[in-house]
Image (cartoon, rainbow, N blue to C red):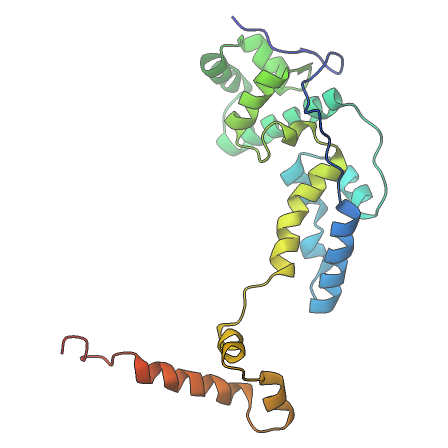
Length: 220
């Protein structure tokens, strides 16, 4: 029978030797710029409850970070215990299982006792890095065990970066791509009044119809 970890919050949890610096301030600044440029709703991007669910951080910590303020200092073990409890609670709510069932499943899959599994899931004891790795896979969290050990700033930055990349690199308009490829300046054509956007699109539609097979012609 394996016994992983130690009591929370004491006892070491394995951690990587490199702690990458976060760029949360830059991420927040760029998102604020994009929200302003595109007339987006700030609440849609910076929803504390949604971000808390994705990071397993408390709403209050998310709110402080979004305001550019630092959360209270914590240890890696404290983060692991707190986030493991949040993740386990969310898992139970999502699956409808009881804690006893979760503990029994972890016992069967990972070879730890039911009692130890319950203590870990309830945030009372800290798993070591080996068990933490398996728990991250079991619960399907992003970034593996780093999900549980990363500082709050890094954890929030991780979930905001995909949104930033999506907003910063929107899918290109195929009409714009074709116009650029053939050297057509959309802005110039609209500025001198020679052609509207709708007229430009109709031209491209006509071109496509001329090169695509018409209905009933494909079998000829």
